[in-house]
Length: 141
Image 1 (cartoon, rainbow, N blue to C red):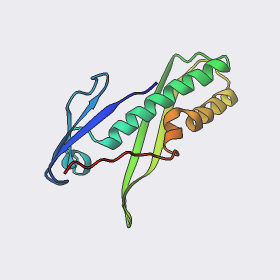
Image 2 (image 1 turned 180 degrees about the vertical axis):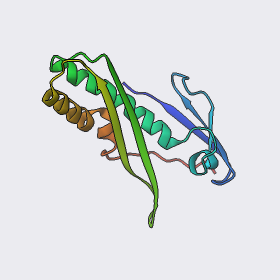
Image 3 (image 1 turned 60 degrees about the horizontal axis):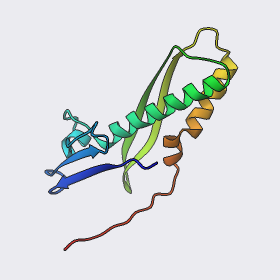
C-alpha cells in the first residue's frame, strides 16, 4: 500500500509560498509558507501535519493493542506536540510528545500501560521517525 502527498513551492524560503496536496484530496492545494511555519501566521506547516499523523497512527495502534488485551475503549484522545528547534546544525525536530487520555471503564492499569507503550513504540509513524530515509532527486535545468 502506497500513499502519496505532493508539495509544490514557488520562490525563495522567506517570501516563497507552497501548497500541499494529498492523494485523497483531504488536503488539496493547502497553502503553507515560511510565516505559517516559523512566525505563527495562521495556516498549516509540516510539523503540525506530522503531529496529526502521529496522533492518529498512535491512537489507532492503541485501540488495537487495548482490544488484544480485552479492553474496548469508549474514547481515546491523543494530542501530539512536535518540537522544532534551531540547533547549531540547523532546524531539527527534537521530540514528539504524545499526550493520551483514554476512557475505558474497568480497564486494568497494567494492561493499559503495556498497550500504550507498545503502541508508542510500534505504530508505523513512530517507526518511520527512526527509519532511514531514501530519496530520488532530479534536476531540470
